[in-house]
Amino acid sequence: MNPQDILSVDSLSKTYPATKSGAGAGLDQISFSLDSGTFFTLLGPSGCGKTTTLRCIAGLEQPDQGAIRLGNKYFFNSNDNTNVALNERDIGMVFQSYAIWPHMSVFENVAFPLRVARDRKYGAAEIRKLVEEALDTVNLGGYGPRSPTQMSGGQQQRVALARAIVRRPRLLLLDEPLSNLDALLREDMRRELKRLQQQLGVTTVYVTHDQSEALEMSDTIAVLNKGRLVQIGSPADIYQRPRDAFVAGFMGSPNLLQGQATKRVGVNEIGTVRLSDGSAVQATFPYAVEAAQAVAVSVRPEIIELKQRSAPQENRSNRLHGVVTNCAFLGHAYRHTLKVGDLNLQSVAAIDKRFEVGSEVAIDFSFEASSGLEKNSIDHTPRPAPLNARDAARAEDAAPMGRAA
Ligand SMILES: Nc1ncnc2c1ncn2[C@@H]1O[C@H](COP(=O)(O)OP(=O)(O)OP(=O)(O)O)[C@@H](O)[C@H]1O
Image (cartoon, rainbow, N blue to C red; front, top):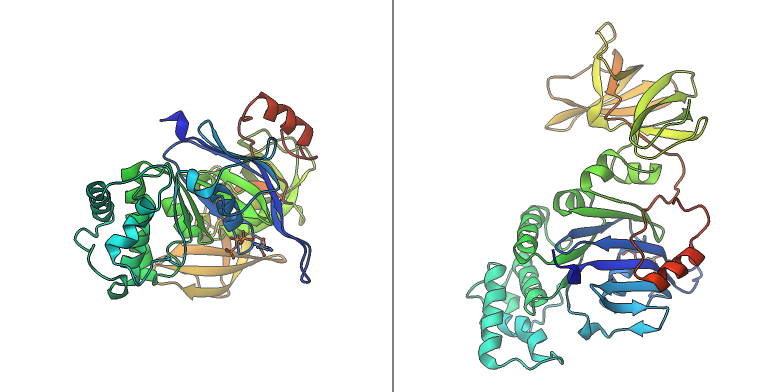
């Protein structure tokens, strides 16, 4: 790993002016640090700040506060007014709208960044070699003379990618690059993009609101909500151990059991949660909670096993009792809706595990697979190592109240 390629974003904040429709939105103290070669995804709903973060890294948007650094080179630092111009940041970018010029050939589109480079002059032979290599990398070898207007959406997106990598940037920024493609092509391009990123070993920041895209492609995911980074982790962490109700809901886990911790629970320990009807369930907590703290338990639909009420209960498994109120065929599985007291839960069961509407069932789910989470959105984001001693002092001063250590 090359330490010169570590991307650090520290306490990035930006406020847009308030509009008629509400207070000014933007970014609130976004921090993360990426090892070189990481495929990192900014994930969240529309308006959460993904594109603004990406544009700040690119130099298309100026943050109000914070620092952005690649290796030991600061792109931006509000402390000493560093703000490096976009074309000196050594990055490649691909946007949702491919931004391919229709009046230029594929070759000229890809050659463009080389022709306008200010830091060095590329000779004709070198341009030819670099463009051909970039086109080969995106499987468009031989397409140079064509007009982009004669190409499909997927091929045009590859041209945009070739243009982004032709200068072999140290950082690749991708803003929803697949969202204009049809569903089948998008699936193919996910794998293609990932292969390309691995082949190049380039640190990549990817923006999407599509959870499955983020899970399939990323090494690390950061979930954003209302301009704040609410959770950062591996795809498995984010999916199986959401930190709060927002992340759980956004990652498609509709089942939340609200209650109180019966006693103090340490990080990654199993704790007991007393539900409002007096029953208790156990879950694994990715963070520490105090006795009587209000918490929730996220139970993913696919970890629920429906059984006859008389069926024996497995070790280390929770059991609730409920009634099936709906059963929907999904093709590969059945989704059951279950009424448990005042609560509606969803389960997804294999095709041979169907229960009729009206069946009284046992609802089993394991302690390990059930995830304890914060009831409210509290920022537990681990902060990256300070950029330097001066920044450390500033970070101490600026640490917002209530942030987890
Ligand atoms: N130039 C601007 N002026 C004013 N407000 C802006 C501007 N750009 C973004 N915003 C606001 O900042 C917030 C974050 O916007 P951003 O585009 O970063 O979100 P996003 O997560 O990328 O959303 P989407 O997925 O819809 O593109 C939104 O509330 C948006 O309205």
